[in-house]
Image 1 (cartoon, rainbow, N blue to C red):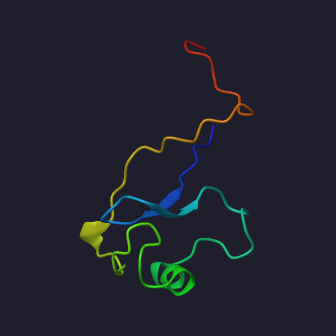
Image 2 (spheres, one colour):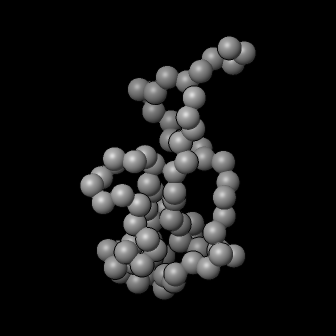
Length: 80
């Protein structure tokens, strides 16, 4: 089984999801760089208005992904 490894861009101030790349093929452009995303969104968070900046290595966090619940998704049963 292959696990999804999504990339989520969030505002560092309010944690608003600016962009979520869940799977290859979701659009024709692929994963945008932070610069491309800022060009698309502007240089401020649309939720709180904080000025966005290019993240440094210290700003990047890797954590388990919690998929949005959907009634159409099948989930494996516990224990097998």
